[in-house]
Each structure stands twice: as structure tokens, then as C-alpha cells.
Image 1 (tube, rainbow, N blue to C red):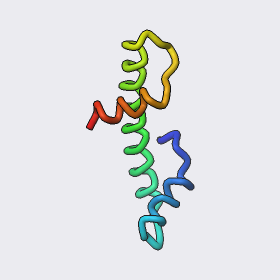
Image 2: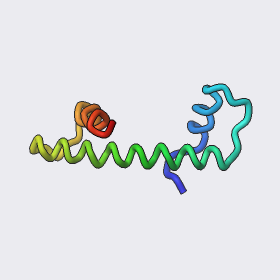
Image 3: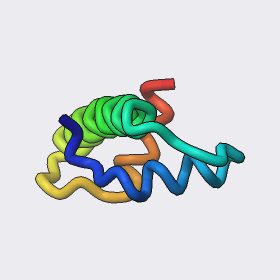
Length: 69
């Protein structure tokens, strides 16, 4: 079960053009988004650690995304 609320996920899918969204579709996208976010967070933490910081900053997130592409 994902920690991401289903309502925003449903809005994202509907904004992409879907008229209706099944619960399974919301769950599947939420699980995927959470997994990607977790991987970015881990990489950003590593970037901050290399910079000898405990605080993860927006630039760490951006660099983590680039590193994971």
C-alpha cells in the first residue's frame, strides 16, 4: 500500500485525459511514483552526505534525478 494519497494520483491521470480511473490504476501509479521518489531521496541523501551535510536541499534532489537518468 502506497503512502501517496489516491486523490492527487487520480487527478494526474484525469489531467492526462482519462475520463474514469480504476482503483487498481490509482494504486499502480501511486506505487510506481513512491518507488521512484524513494530512489531519488536515497540518491539525494548520498549527494548531501558527499557534501558533508545532513540536510537534503533542492539542488541535491535535482542532481539525484540527473544521476538516476
